[in-house]
Length: 351
Image 1 (cartoon, rainbow, N blue to C red):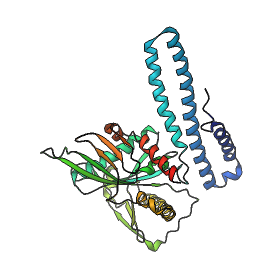
Image 2 (cartoon, rainbow, N blue to C red):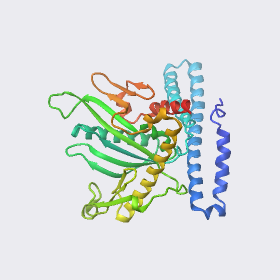
Image 3 (cartoon, one colour):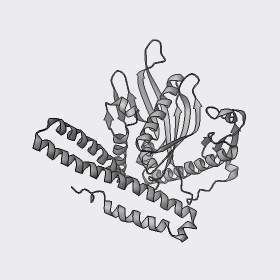
Image 4 (cartoon, one colour):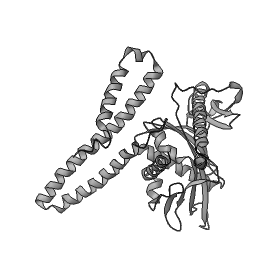
């Protein structure tokens, strides 16, 4: 069995070897930004190669079991092999998706912001469900999630949350989620058990490499301090350590409250602002190239990208690609790969 050529795996192994040798050069050690970029590339390649090697080994084992079940006419073993092959197909599809991640920032980690729409408690609960969905997805990819800012709902759920997702291709996978997400269900907060429609907006932007210059005029940034809320003990409740930065020309707002000091929160907020401004500029250039795609790039309340219907039937549908799934509970539990893959295929067909 050999599908290594399909993924150019030997080429990736050689590139990884070259990068590791380069990272050991004293010349690179003297350039922290270059070393950071090389280490990021190494991490991405190692992730792909490890996944490939795991799939290849499991495929070999499955072939051995298949031969055994045929020789011994063992139905139980045959059923085990069938399940293993289905799992291998899913793993191979995930690896194939990485071939579609060729954007300039796709390899980078990501920042994600979820904000509840109008609708009070119901909308806050929906924003919380989306946050859980992305957390579960990140866990399935072995990504690290760190909450940067969170505002609880008045009685349930969350009004907003901003968090980082750290790991190779985090932005490449999650960029498909930017937009408005619509939920239709019987509200657990309605004593009359009526059907409700709720909205939440999601914005995803990449963590920007330190070597990418983003000009920010201090006069264009309004900085506010406030008392953080939530977990963190006495310190977080008694000091105005949280930071909110507003970029006046663009209206971009970033907040950070999870660090232990105002200085650390300020540094994290500025990093997020740089990333958001860079992402905005990239999107502007893309829109200029193709006006027909502009609606896919905007984060407006009237342009929902995906609907999650839990009543009177169960269906999750992406309005950009047309892809849908009747496994709504699994999707809300973080199984987003099929939606991500269809979105990346759509981008590839348009480029």
